[in-house]
Every structure is written in C-alpha cells, then in structure tokens.
Length: 259
Ligand code: 6PG
Image (tube, rainbow, N blue to C red):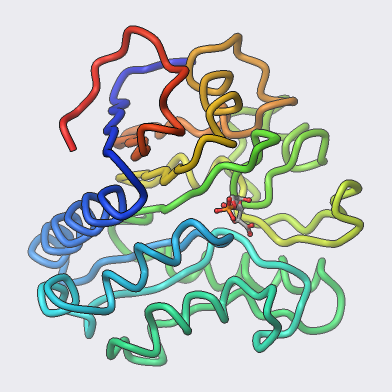
C-alpha cells in the first residue's frame, strides 16, 4: 500500500487520540477558512468518533472553530430514520451538532427515505452541487475501521468495492447504496473516489480488537477486495492514521508521529 503522504500517530489511549484528533481538526478547519472562507468535513459513523465529537463540542476546541463557516457531510449512513439509535446522523447530533452552532443550511445528512438507491442518488446530487464550487473537494474526511477491514460502508465483497478495485480512477460515482450481506441491511456510502479526492483524510482507530486488522491494512499484502480500507489513499492530499497503543501494538518498524 503506498505510504507516500501517510502519517501514523500513536497515542496512549482513546482519550489522548481524541485530543490529538481534535487539535488536528481545529488546525485543518482554521487553514481552510483562512484560505477559502469555509471548511468542509465528512463525518465518520460508528462509535469511535463519539469521543472526538464530544471534545469538538466543548472547550477548548469548540471556541477555536468558526462553526458558522463549517459544512458538515457524512461518509455513510445506515438505512434507518434520523432519530434511530443506529443513525450516524443522530450520533453526530447528540455528540457534536447539538452543542455548536452550525447553520442548518450547512448540515448535509444522507436523507434516508424510500429506497436506499434514491437516498444515494439524492446525496450524489448534494455532493455534485457542493463539489462544483472551489476547491472542488472536501477539506477533511474522518473515517473509522471495522474489524473486517471496512471503512465508511465499504464492506468486503460489495459492489462499490468491486467497482473501485476494477476502476480505481473512476470518479463518476460519489455515492453508492448497497445491501451488506453480513449485516442483512442496506447501507449508503461515499465511494473511495470521492474520499480520495479530499485534502486530508484521518482514520481514528482505537482498541486492541482492531490491532490484527490494522496491521493487515497498513502492513499486509494489498488486497482491497478483502480489506476495503486499503482503497483509501488520497490522490493529492494527506492521510493520517490516529491510533491508540492497543490498536497499534502489532505494527512494526514505522515512523510514528509523537502524540
Ligand atoms: C459506520 C461507520 C463504520 C465505522 C466502523 C468502525 O457507519 O459504522 O461508518 O465505517 O467507522 O464500523 O466502527 P466503530 O467505531 O464502532 O468500531
């Protein structure tokens, strides 16, 4: 897996990882607002980012971000209503967006109504109109890692992953809906192509249960059909893996950034 432009930062525990990720978020946001007057971020779902989002919604980080200029998107969503306990939108609202003042027009959830394919098509339109404006890419994409090597809702063996492996340069599709056999559920996900166009991509991965998968993704053979997170490498941007020691303990001989 190409490691150009890839950094690995290892902190002692999830709390330290969340603080370090919050510091990077603040810095990236300030840089984007200074450069272009706004900062666009794609939020990750799942449970890991909750700690980071709560930190961003509180001192000292909340006051260091110009929330009025922040545009919020999601990397994936479950096929559930926005008030469902499984909803990534709800998780972000509970942990962050209910605590800071982002203008409602700047909050772009994946709208789940009717067929999953319709949700994907609708979000494709949302992204199309946003990415038509400069700089034409997201400033930051936050991602997690599943213990099967998935990221966002790019699960092993799914159509979006097969398509991405077959057509690595294909940027025609930004959003995909797919039935995930192992979950017995539909998911809507951004494609690797649109993620890889981002200026900065940050994976936040903590906990010993992720260690084997993390070592396979970062230091094992390149096999993206089985480990879709290996499809994530920015075309012209920065990739940062923010890990705690238990998750990183199987990694060998790498340049670790000091947390
Ligand atoms: C989701 C996420 C998914 C998540 C991983 C890790 O919707 O579940 O987008 O990609 O990041 O499954 O989840 P945890 O953080 O809960 O381990």
